[in-house]
Image (cartoon, rainbow, N blue to C red; front, side, top):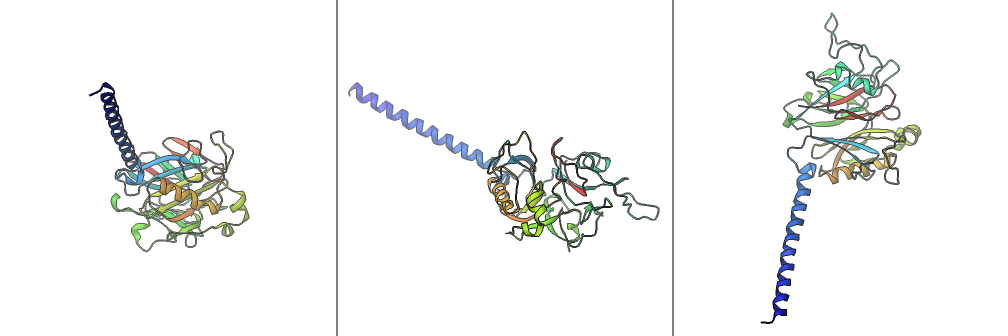
Length: 308
């Protein structure tokens, strides 16, 4: 047997071994992808990241995103509104006190009323509009106590139900829910752009100002797998943002692109419901001791998330 023939066999064997290692490596990478996809992780609770307008993660993205699982036993929830006294306080007749005062995002997520069992929130997003008397306009309920305004039956609201963690449900609809357990933590909003899985461009409904000029956006969406997406698009100039054709202010016809992209890229299912919160001078988003977006306008209410 010639020396050249033996060398040839040796080279073939090396290539085969190399190929096997490559296949093993690729398989491991694919397995890693599947285990890191949020929707495929049974223990997932909450995560923050940034995306472009296609819903792809991007460190300098204009969209600040929080995804959470309402059924996670690691999480709890609360709603806060601007009050001059303690939340849930009652007067001498046993009626709920409702002495509203204007509070900006930073104030309303850090005051005494923002704590749950002494713990400060891990995440927060601005929600309801505020009227000229500093009162929330929509339906706001904080752990069963209602702080609502003139549009509580007309505008849609977002919320998380009471009950055992594994049974909790996120909902978006107008007015109180027929099942009382769903009316536990609710925040008012406006502009319903997803309803029963069907998307609608609500530019005409919002009007010229809200659609094309006051483009700072704050919104929430629920997927058919029960996950919640909170998103704030910061249209203001920011040194940490790289503006481009797919990384800029969001218009109503683009809500579908970014949300479906986020849901698809993170295995969350399909978007089922979607709602706008107060935009323009109000959007704010906080996560893990950092305020990522804040504006100077007073806030009607905030939705708060806690890590147990």
